[in-house]
Image (cartoon, rainbow, N blue to C red):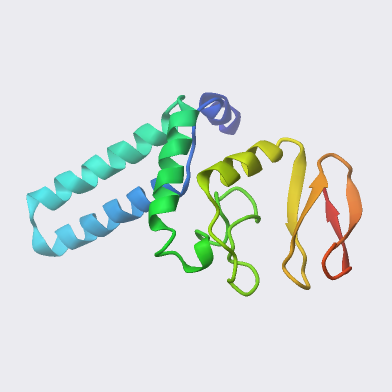
Length: 158
């Protein structure tokens, strides 16, 4: 059953921060509707859920990624340190700015796209000592990584 679902989702966009926000907003509207009983809240929640599932099952991944980037750009001033839930895209622990002192500058959409392209060939890790982002090539197995900033060594699997 799991393989069938994975085959079905192959080539589809999946879940991202905008979908998580839409689902949470729909859940909040449903809970409020339990107490208030206003039909417009129920309809709004239903529209948000349909929109979330449409985005999740969409095969137009580039358009969905642009929508998510716009959402992240719009909400960056509300999110602490520029990260959403600990990381930038919900797909690994890099680039979100929630590590370290919070003095990072805001990434532009072009920088995020460039970093997504690099994910094909590199893994990104955070130094456990100074929170510096370190890029290492994929597929090298367990390697010892030395932070270029503080020279701390740590072992990770690529």
